View (cartoon, each protein chain N blue to C red):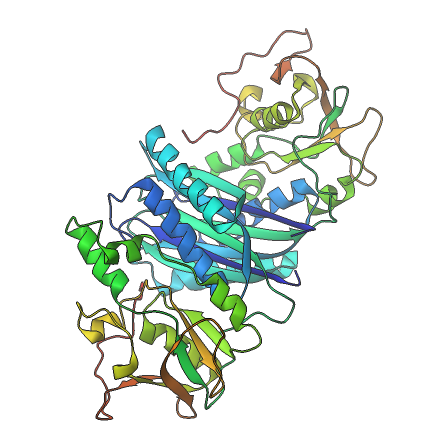
Length: 266
Length: 266
């Protein structure tokens, strides 16, 4: 299995996306969310497997539209379907995507490699997907924020370029604070984030934007002074040697009070 | 991806297994059913990914027992967990397993390689899993048939030994007639099965035993006179050049009337 990166991601209607989305959008979003995990490893995707649980009574038009969404993204992203399973369910629509990618042996980025002193670089803004979900729930599906929720852009090229430079990486799917917390704890370090440096959607309170998730930007742990050529990153904080975890501080140095770090199922 | 075999298999409570099974049994069965697909390819399993959808309100004891089942089979089958995703669902418990295995480049067995004149060899009896499911539903979980349903034995060693000998292979998960029908249609041939030669559980009508599925034996297309050393196979029929499909004939040469070929979701 040398050089192979794999990841699985499940999207369930009513949990990960609102009921009533067009099937093609459900398909594309599920595939792109799964690919974001590969991007964070520095892997280049090669193919995927699809396990689809269709509610009883799903019609052929639904399946055709779903397949059209997959076909569009297979072409756009250079992927092929390697296998699949389709089952009926009395519950909600559920789409489980396993992605496979290539990465040179030993070169995969992990969340556990951050070092004390590393800076934290972020490849995009947070909060747009949460705003987009709200837009969609209110019937506005054509806003830029709605598109951020519906069509995440997995950062494949950035992850690949980060190999051998970044000490660790993660994608922001559970929320910025939660995911940087995952990276910090896996690395046995504390992440200190600078609230004022975080690029965030201004339509939401900052505390919501940094905990809402679904933004699929990458956060990378970088040695001081190092960047990734061709990819502008925002420096949003640093790793330090203190009790493992994550904290966010305002311009006055005070801790930002957060009700939660991010998305949790249980 | 040279030399890599992958497959995904989803098991949903109430669809693939009855409600109320012990969590460890659900876990082991899901893993073994997925591995059976690799066996049919002649691949040797290396690892798996797990996408688990847990109904709202699932407790920790459930998760601990489920994990214990996985741990037992990881050890028994020489596997490791490569990744996973756990989500909540308002629907039924659903377990999606993606298995990865190794097979020499170009050596994987496929369902599409059968040739006219090939004999069809079967590695086990059919109908026991169906009888076992009935036993379980009636509260008898310790019968041999119940164990056949609960703990399928993926035929890894047979599949591996079949490389370079068998022209095609498939596992009997949808029902003997349905799966041999898949192999026949994929190969552009007709499979003619001899009802009297099929080893089947005698507690069920033969027409049910050969369409019920879940037996996870392998069916292999073999050149006339060839066997697979060390693996006794029952010769249950042959592939011929007639309209693609499958038929089952009795000792008198008459077609066995079947209501359906096997399991279908839709």
